[in-house]
Image (cartoon, helix red, strand yellow):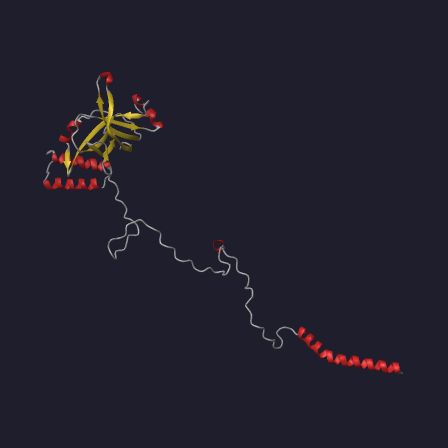
Length: 290
């Protein structure tokens, strides 16, 4: 009997305990089981944004060095203008040219030499209908051509090289002529020779005259028909300068020649004589007779 009462009391105590504890436990379970988005969730306390941005689109190779903080790099600053040593325009407000003006084309040497010969001819008195105006026109033409030509090449105190041309024979059997125009600066004290050599490519050596094959160049050296001691006196004055044109002919093949020219003098006599250069050699360049 006593045992039965004891068991009933124990069961009633356990029931009361469940009534007290179950509401909290049920609420916690309900909150855990409640799906997100249902009801009104409590506001989260303020904190720093730690959300991860979506994965970026792969960058092209030219931009793969972009800063990690941003997928779109800030625009680069404008580059500093490059240093320049060109002179600035001295005229205020005048725009500077984007590029320098092209240099004037050089005058073919043949044209300069032809103008020289024309002036000599009309001054000779042999040309018909020559007037002072015609002579003046040719002299103006000469000045224009000379201004567009390379500066004379210094050779010695007495003379400089102005131009040269290489001409084919006018008819079969005639020599090929090399024309050289000199500017005469002062009188030669004595008669000098001209050492003229036309160097050829190795492949053309066999086309040289037999006497020149061993040297590898055509030798046109000679004593000018007009002795150099007479050049200043016989020179042609055009403008402020005086000029002499020489012509040297020879047996030449139709191949390119690299001509070099220099004055020389012969010192001593007999076996003791020797050739001595006078001044500097001038390079006429590669010429082909035309």
